[in-house]
Amino acid sequence: KLNPAPASTKPPSTLLGPSTIPTPSKSLNDRVGLLRGDITTLAVDAIVNAANRSLLGGGGVDGAIHRAAGRGLLEECRRLNGCPTGSAKITNAYKLPCKKVIHTVGPIYDAGDHDASEKLLVSCYTKSLELAASNYCRTIAFSGISTGVYGYPSWLAAPAALSAIRNFLLENDKAGVIEKVVIITFEKKDVDAYNESLPLFFPPA
Ligand code: AR6
Image (tube, rainbow, N blue to C red; front, side, top):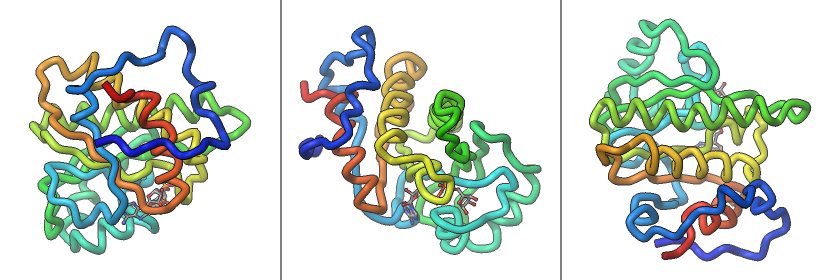
């Protein structure tokens, strides 16, 4: 069920051109959900980690995922030889309740070149969904990518993420592998950003 949009201070609707105004679709909306909590507790098929290019762990959600998964995850990540920004790699989940971990590397936000940052962020979501589908992961949960240490403002990241998810479900997932995409937020700023953007990209049918 979609959350109601709170009063807006920064209208992300300005990011939507007239040709991209989404049409309502109940079946599409049923495939996307918003939760607040800790991604390491979710028993979905795949969770998406906001990693860095080394894939060897770090702070934020990456640190939480590695701590909860245990040493096996780090050992597998060592064999992956890192990952470029905007791309994604998949591993097993070890002690986590999910089945797989998809590690994606978001951009460090560059306000001077917003378009380049946005392209990379969209690519993170698209590549992660592609990997999930090709590994038969039907349920996937995303934490915010780049919205912590990497400084991407949540109110700009949320519409980019939702646009990528919507496009993937409509255009790329013709076989309908992905049943549910969960966005799990941790902080109030992220909750507010998604509450504002969700009805724009997934309007109530
Ligand atoms: N569950 C869900 N979301 C979380 C959790 C959690 N347990 N912990 C944090 N978040 P960040 P980035 C949210 O900084 O900006 C690491 O050191 C958080 O509120 O984890 O992509 C990596 O190794 C924020 O909205 O990732 C990289 O070096 C979102 O997760 C660098 O940070 C992402 O924040 C990546 O920075």
